[in-house]
Length: 176
Image: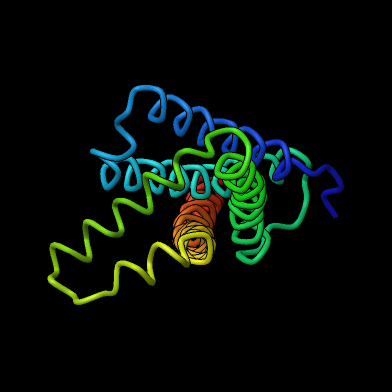
């Protein structure tokens, strides 16, 4: 069996890339105005990372004369996304608590703006009294969204990469 653990290295590289993008968007102040574009962009990076790592893992297994199965290829790409997601979630928790604590106030204000735009009645005294509880709920919701979306995109990317890897193996077998 393939003993090296390249999915950890690849996941770390992807996580560092996502963290750098997050820090850059924070300092350029585009995280709040263009957040939908940034979210789609980071999910595309994860999709590419998962599919590319599964596909390149095929070549690694071929070079080492290891048995290649669809599940091996799929799991490799998915593990890359799991590692990247775990590291990014740790960064996210550190960022909202220690690195950029003012961001939670911004998220809180964005939530209140969305409530006002939707014309949902709410008690402002209750909101003011329970702001810390609401901020915890916001941070937990954001963390859950990060985990769920990243892993769903990881499944899709790993499937794409595993299919591409198996197709390339079949093409090489036809040539031989």
